[in-house]
Length: 183
View 1: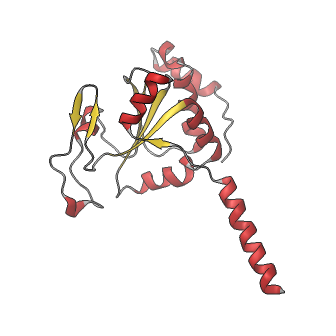
View 2: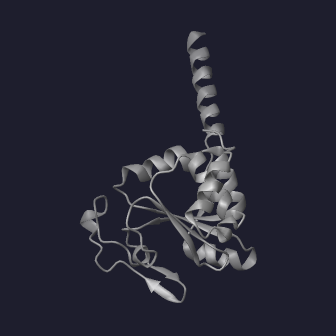
């Protein structure tokens, strides 16, 4: 009897964790560009590397947050891109590769991908936001908690960044922003 209760308790706990955690619907950059033509949305690209600790924290603590996942899935096309990987990517009438990629360093520092150079990525993680035409809005560097990412998700979704031509305007937005995401 105690064994059955213990198993039921464990199953209930595992089910609860699954319900709390949510997945972002990740697509490739090429898929996101195709989807934009049918239903225009902005693109959010997670530029990560296999060896990056803060990248793993972003995955675990932020991207699996229910509020973040729900908002991203509703308002963005989400792309996860290994900025030091070996994937070939067609974007903006160009093919991006990683000619310096070393398979022996797949889980260590490797050569930066041409796409990461195109977006001028200098730190990992960096979340790149693109508009509905695939043009860069901004790269957001570093680990972000759900509420920190919420600020940028809502700023870019509403195109409020277009009116911010000074640091003071961004500071005012930041100060007035009231996060709603939990976690």
